[in-house]
Length: 138
Image (cartoon, rainbow, N blue to C red; front, side, top):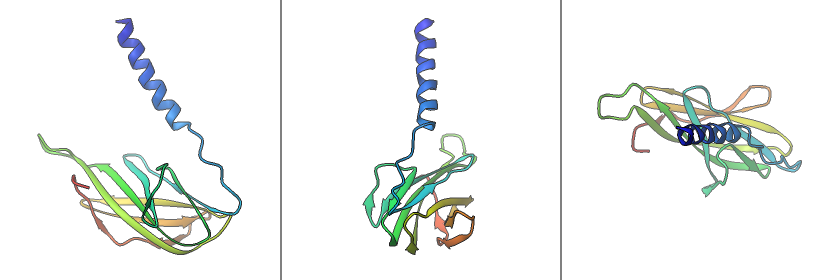
């Protein structure tokens, strides 16, 4: 019984510490894009200009034009024997990333499609993706 409690405690502690992990330092000569999930959705950074990123929580970019790829996972009511999780891959291209600026990427999913958008610190949408398909295979 003590071993079971210790295992559960370790699992809970690892989850809490992952949430409190520090973001990378925002270098003054680069742009920072935070990848923000909402309840019931998991949004993660995947690629910058086709190159895989090491941390799914953000992008650090040189000023200028970039194409950012993100993966959205969310749960929809599933059937017996079928996962209710949907996954989508989306890209955003933006030509005017500026040094020292902070941006965020957010997503909205409905049924089997999703959209992602880039916004500045003031909450203004700068660019939005096309509607992308979502399913269990992505």
